[in-house]
Image (cartoon, rainbow, N blue to C red; front, side):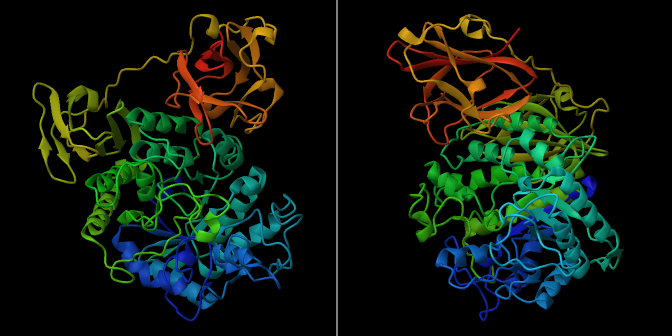
Length: 634
């Protein structure tokens, strides 16, 4: 399954906001700035366009019946349009189409060699009107979340039913953390069994089984995704989950994240890729740049005051981010509109949460804009067409070069200015590089460093690079990407020097046994807490993570931590005082500048080993933040 899933190039569709193919149906309302009249016919009409991009899978947001309850308000009507709170998991919502139309959609996709994924909401449903399965089962307990394992049989029946009924190829799993991994194991078995007992004829005239792919949505760090989705090596649950941690790093490198944090580089990307070591061996993370719940990449560029659609860098940064995705080992997902650099006119800043829903411009649904399908719903601009063509070229590279989608990655260079990877899969070897800065640069790469004994060929431009005295000289303009085929790979592979990791600091702030002092003369009297996405606290203020005063304006807490990435702030219980690190990425074992924090200004750090760590904060006598340090205890 992992080998097949690595070749998935998924195109995500938010059904109600996509394309209005049947004017006689539609919700007519919903969250976000679209027409809210999207339907199944609109997707059928768009299949040729999606195929022209080089995508081989479509994922639709839920299309199950979400019947209105008598007297419900317009907010419930809007929620019904999303499909994420269904009333009947075994019926197609008539405002999207019919069962026959859904079957036609799947068959038309299969004729084109494309897979179809449904959206599985297996942890919640609409309150007050949930209908039984064909065998008479119902979910158990509350409506959000339902009870497990009591609801397991119901959702197993849902998962298997649509594979057998329509021959769909699998599921995207909404809020997958609501389902215990033990139940995911059994639901996955239901999907596997249904897929093995179902066949259809593909575009090559072959009789095949549905793929049975399942990909989890879990917004959290790698450790939590493993805990709630992948399971353990000994007891594996799901095989794929969206790579949210890396998605945010890509946004922070080439644009900004939703909180405006950016200006990262290739080293930030590489650290994110290294985090995959935390996943079990059966994991196959799926990288996307956007989805229906985040701000579009184009709007993030504007939010960060980086570039407008009229600027050349707007399109170059899109290409850089998309190229990084194209070079990713594992399945990838493209949110509709990202292939043309789509954005919402007039939107860039965060809107007031009390009024944004009325205007349709909240961060978590601003990306649900009407689809611009060339030749169907829109005529694209030259810049949009150019980016669309580039996406098609990238997907062709992934098809023709398995090193990109399934290759073993060896990082060659990762610094503020550039990111370079060596990718190897059997007889295919690619050197991928992308600039992470505005300035032009020239790279000098040793032949032994990249494992090459011959020429390098740029697969996008056909330009060739030959070594001179064992050195390749490769120019890279601002945010340019190159996919260089290594014509004669060195059998020994690339030669990269191991980098020493600093774990231990020096001085008073690195000591783990400093005595606690009275707070009489302390610069801050209120208790501070280490608050973050740690498994033992989940952004709660927990006493084991409370700071103790050690004198000289320094506060410390010593905690036994598990290896992994963490985000945090240092805050009082009422969040009246919050502190973070200047640049948001402290160096382990070093003194880092401490500054005032706030929402979205989280410190992010990677702890490479299990063990006791001391978290130190320093303030001046007036209570102003001064410095911080994280050090492993010796």
